[in-house]
Image (tube, rainbow, N blue to C red; front, side):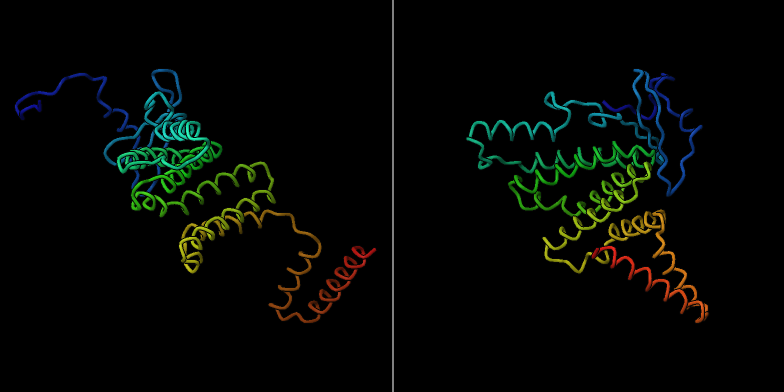
Length: 271
């Protein structure tokens, strides 16, 4: 029963988060997150919001619940699918997700979104890969087994974003270890996955204007800047600068050096 305006709320200081919020200012437009250790001794993630804060578990379901004894609703429905296949000789036919199932899966995916966004800001890229990969499984499951077309398609609009975040996290892991070529390969793979997404839905022209594509291309350029420059590329850069400065004598010498280097490379390949 709700309290009347004249009734006083329970006076339990332990429930009041004002001191926490007072020491952690909200910053508009900034994703402000931090790690803490909870009263149970287990690490937590907190995100500062305008009217308070959001606290999440680092592993498992972000709210700490275990629906149907599983880590999440996704794992529960995936277990249902495995059991269905076992009973029907490995066939998927007859397995469905109701609109209510899909709504609950979407609500759960939103929690994981908040967490992987926080984890990315904290630089925990391994966990970002874990959570984004998990949310892509939600899209795949609903896309295959939802009884209503609306539920099959509703989450697809977020696929390029989730791919982009997973790609950035995966590439960042290698980037931190100075495995630049591997990081660049992951970025290219992510871009191809987004291109395939738009082609699947009949809108290949949307690829070039996609914000997620622009983010990944920019990240790819940043990686390329860190790659060691070979002798041939160094000469080509010098040539470009010489031409821009209209130093044609230097440009001619550089062209000769480039031609000689390319001829030497071809000779080595044919030897």
